[in-house]
Image (tube, rainbow, N blue to C red; front, side, top):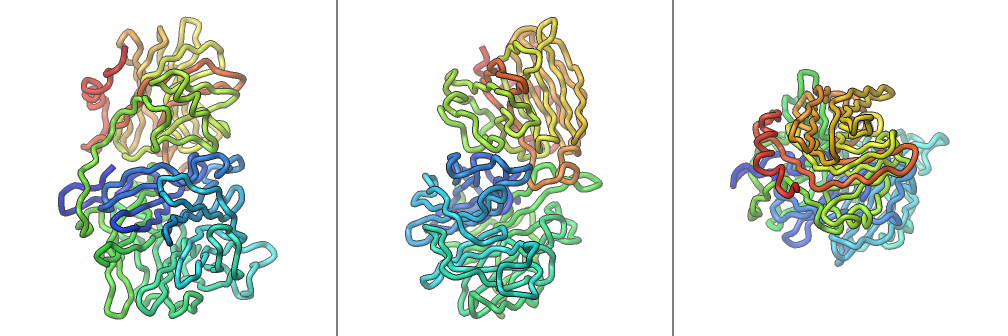
Length: 541
């Protein structure tokens, strides 16, 4: 994936779609970046780049069930706000499993893995960070008040940032947590990251809540324990009341280039419509940081992160073309694919029929805790996704198809189900407690191509059978999957699924899956047909 539009500029976001809470570190000329994953498995996607614009996925930090228990994770629960750091030949990632265990640290010598089993840190709050300095390892997080009061010595505390010393290989606290700063006055001070430059220690926070009031603030001190004074120049980054395509920008992590320049990564959203709303989740953006003569930093353009801006002073990587098709020819899934809360058996999914995905639902529904769903992030408002599925439902209550999913109570799906005359295509719309099903067509055979076309406002589903006839469902309103309507901290996923609430389903075989953005920003059925002529039926027998 790439954010590049010319040899001298790039466009934000540099990693589009649901990639929130980015954290970054540099080792030599290579950069490594991690993001939050919430209730999705595997956990904590990790990327690498040499130019900060083109990012290659390496996999996931938490790729084994022994590392990641999401069985109690509600929608938007699970893994919050990872931080990645490198020290003395080891990579370290810390994050919070808010649904089971709290803070943890894992380590690896190779960022592509394998990563260690987690060690747990006895400190409350969320958004942990590591800071290596002069022989000490500082462990910093926000504080979550307990009903009986804070667990540290600060009777005046409401919310703020706490810090301890830790052994990063065992998680053992070497010094008790201490309150170090309450922030600049914005609500929900969190996402602390500590840096040292010259004689000062700088503490960067997110404040204002991860909504349209989000911002990045900064304080400094001559000691990592404070006291910290806030920047006299105000927030480091703020898009509040700014007419920008990027909104809710915050949760930043600073870093240096090999030439000594400073930059930051942060999260932001791209709302659309007269009444702003967003589907794609919080995305990763990039901006330069400059230092004033008084040793305070300024970011972007007076605190605003522009969509298009000059590239970092790094050699540009070759442009990465979008990979439209996944043929599922490997024995493992590509890093873009995710499960909900726990993995399906990959050996069975990828190995039961070589070159195809095999989806078999066992007492699971699309609106259940563990759906038989394999999804990838929707990364563009205008896109076309298509898949070929061979499926012959044998039971009345089983189905398979393609879905766009925000969570288990907000999704749309085109389902293939049993019918007295063969099989039928049904459009499912789940919005909160309400579900509406509409018949689309009665079909013959067991070989189908399903399509979903998205734009700012709608999704349009269609299905093609062996006879070549295309049956199109009525368009559905995309706003019901937006964060503003459905809530939560994630973004929309799209992918194939199977469901059988009462028992074991017949296997659904998935030959390939296409995902293509629409460069003109307005996906439509005719453009989808153009894509079909060039890519759709390759490999269809």
